[in-house]
Image 1 (tube, rainbow, N blue to C red):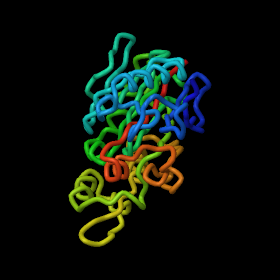
Image 2 (image 1 turned 90 degrees about the vertical axis):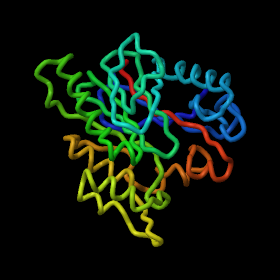
Image 3 (image 1 turned 90 degrees about the horizontal axis):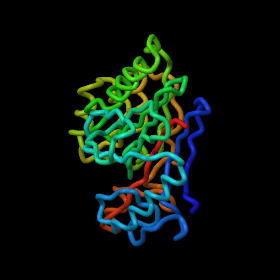
Length: 264
């Protein structure tokens, strides 16, 4: 089974693997149908359970590693994945040093962020919507990654971390209210530069820009992937990306894509 996968282009050691699933453009790309066609990986969005299970099985085969699916709640907790960790842990980030275990984040407009220690010994994934950013999920993911790094490599706490930002709702489509802007300004007064007033008390928010600022503040200097351009916008990529904001309005439902990172 071929799966529609986007492979990040970033400078990580050969032992670190990553992938971002696209929705697919033909029935051969997944088992889901209707509003969820074709490669929906979310089991909480109303899709047929058998179709989701099949898609997840195909994903595991394609990765050659076991994806661990979290119960994401737009919070800041980061779970450490170990061989016995089952799906359903409540967290919005995952960190692991275990080989063949994929930190996996589901998205459909929120920003997926993949992280790796420069030596490839620890990897992480974070779910960064605006609520997660305001709660500090990226700083927490980086902190837990560094904790695990010290565990597996004592004395390596200051080893550089590399980040890749995947597709998400773009700055031209992410209209938010004043309360969202205020929530993000509360943690970073300089965040105002990532908002543009668009009338009626609304703002266009640059989610990748906000995340990049938070990552830099957490000590991550090597940032790759989503730069806020239209090519990364899930709302505009109608053919191959799910978008909660676009699809809920048009179809009343949408699927989820997955960002995965693992150690071979």
